[in-house]
Each structure stands twice: as structure tokens, then as C-alpha cells.
Image: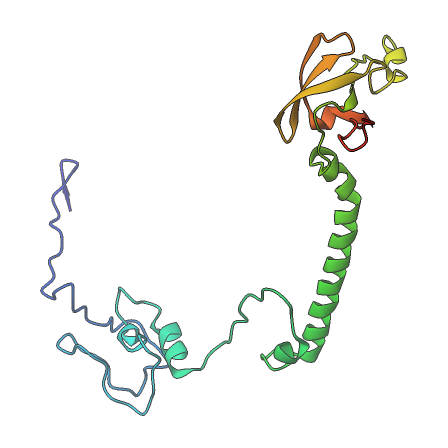
Length: 216
């Protein structure tokens, strides 16, 4: 009801406490037909020959707060649709065949799983060389001789010759300090500092002589 564009309708007041809602009579639940329904004065479901799962009995009331009572009752009675949970780790054909799925769906699922594992294995093998290039297990020690990768710029035909250039420098460098397992400090052959370089930009040329290999 409005008066000069102002809503004068008062909100509807309820006499039922919110902690004890009355089930809606308009909602028809085929599972509850023929069974005594909970009222506003009842705090528990009436006793039936139904064994509810732990914690499911309070959710069986068809109340506004628990409008999905059909699913709650189905779950409490152990009936209704069975949803296959997510499967992690190794999949057993024995468990799948007795989980309610058809044999055709089981075979299709297992075939897809085998195909997925094969495809993933092939993909991992292809990408391993690119991954290992940035995560090298080879450690470089002080005194090792290395080459540094050159980052030449190329702009199509104008710099076509740069595409044919060497990827690593012709000059060799010596590792003077190990800053981290992947960062090394280099010096040139003339003992001039060459800065810090990442291991992915270095190529090992010669190992430094160990103390045992040096002739006394």
C-alpha cells in the first residue's frame, strides 16, 4: 500500500519464535506423506521404524532453514541416489564394479584413465629437457671454466646474421665465487670481473683440477 509514493505497508509480524519454525503446509513432500509431521512445539522428530544417520535427524524437518528435507531424509534412511566420491591414487577394478556403476561405464572410465596416464607420461618426457635446462642438478665449483650464453637481438631480415651467431661466447670465463647453487660470479681470463651469471646461461667447458690430481 502506497500513499503519495511512500510505502506505508507495515512488515508482517510472526508469533512463532525463529528457533522453532513451523513446516510450511504448502510444501508437499512425498516422503513425509502419511507420516506424523513435527510441529512448532516439538523439538524432535516422531519415532518411526527408521534409523537415521548420526546428525541427520534434526535436518529431517521440512523447515525454511532446512528446505531440502527430501535429500536429508533420503540420506538418513540410506536411500536415494548414490554419488560416487572422488577417487584418488590407484583405482581398483574390484571397488568400481561393486560401487553401483555399470560394467560398461567402468570399462570406459578405466580406458580413459589409462589413456590419460599414457598421455601425461609422454608429455612429461617431452617437457623434461626444457624443465631440466632451468633446474640443473649439475653444480659448478670455483675454478671451473665456462662459457656464457649470448643474447643477440634479431629483427627479421635486418639482423638475419645474428640468427647464425654462436649461442655461447667464444671467450671463456672462470668461476671465482659461488653465490648460490644457481648464481655464480665470473672473471675473465685476464682476471677482469664479468659479473654474476645464472646457471642456465652457463655451459661448462672444463672442470677445475682437484687437489688429488695435482702433482706434488
